[in-house]
Structure formats: C-alpha cells, structure tokens
Length: 119
Image (tube, rainbow, N blue to C red; front, side, top):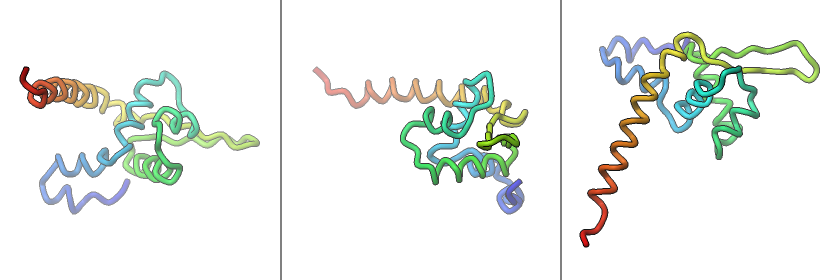
C-alpha cells in the first residue's frame, strides 16, 4: 500500500479516503469493476471508462492496486493476459459509490430547478 500515514496521522479519514479513491477516473474504474461479474482486462476497462488516456488509466490502476482496492492478475500466456478485479476492500466501496450516485442525481435535480429560468 502507498504510504498514507501522514494523512491518517493527521486524523482526517475523509481526506485519507479521498486520497485513495479520489481523482478523475478512479471512481469510474471502481464502478466498472463493481458492475462486472467477471474480472476485466485493461482494454475492457479503457472502453468502459470512455475518454481516459492510457497513461492515466495505467497510473490509476497502479495506485488502486497499491492501495489494496484492485487486484491485478497476470497470466503466463502468449500474448500475456492481465485482468483486474476488486479486492474485498474494493467491493466494500459498492454501497458508498451507490450513495454518491444517488446524491449526485439529487443534486443535479435540485440544481436544474435552481438554475432554470422562471417562466
């Protein structure tokens, strides 16, 4: 795991959590793995994420793996096959991400009411 000690010692679990799962693409990748009933290959994750660059995808997957959220399995085949799946800790994010999605839906609904012009 990456050294998150400084943030954890600071006593801010929210900041620690955001360090682990925050960023542009990490929640998208975690959601793709939650939605899949089988491990996904790199190209499948890239397709599900959309406009993510290879560099960003690789970096995000490495960080999620280092933090114990994603498990990376390399198969000794030619060509090499690599699959990604959530660890138990990663799976525990499913209800949290669902709650974030619900909040986002509610906020969008409320915001659209506030920003719509009065007729």
